[in-house]
Image (tube, rainbow, N blue to C red; front, side):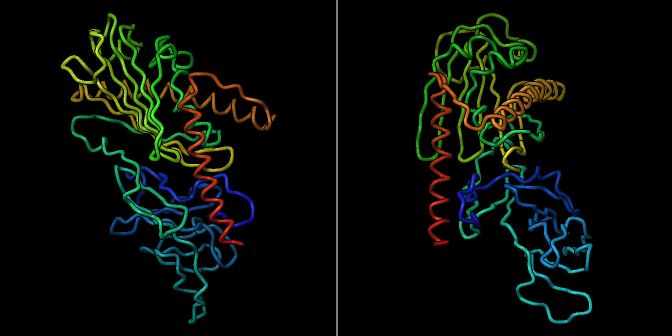
Length: 353
């Protein structure tokens, strides 16, 4: 929740990815989320823990201390905290003040990811975790990664909800001219925004040629689901021979799912967790790695765009933007985020008044 009288630029009451599950072990890990220092670790029995990374005594980061069993000892004066953030030991002092504690954050582990809730703990419902269950689907092989982005989280969410840029930024891998020319169908509802593109009887992009062996004109699709406030699930695929029908099924089709979870770090930087799946040639690890490297190349091209945009915004914060017809879904997504921010900030400011 917002702790001062100014509106927060972040939606706190939502689940955000803090780490890939495999990367979080019984060791302390520091991360900044929404300008807040957070300490992550696993207990000896494997539970993920998230605490404020700041000792309540003299504000030294707890991550610079020592993990002793499941407790954290500050490296400055030895204050020791349990998994809830409560101080349980102070050297040379038997009585512990009840207020000697640090904030603990709700966390859960789902879909191979560790999720954190930065807002009101009472609202941390695990049923609200975005659906990344495809990562547990045996029909899909997948690979995952983390990137640090030099751009505000909303720039990245913008990018993921505007795949017309594939025709220009990613023309050597997953895009070609057909993407930008395709008609866009947009569905805007309470739970998010879904957009669909069909590219009928068009040349396959380079990645489809190299990994799926597609040659002549194909039918291709993109279905982008924005899951507020910062996660995006992109389903793509194609049919080896065009038949002009708008359906995803058939023996000659391939499918892929890209999962994107953007966690705000600061006003100008973001944590970017992503995974890429595929449902063809799943018994060939080399194919999974080849696809992963092609997608990774495309995403690193995006990182350059984010940094350029962020620099331009900092240079001219009030610079004008002109939107076009292809931006319909992106604009709907912006409105969703803005609505969530207004609702949350209104509630926070009202409670402070």
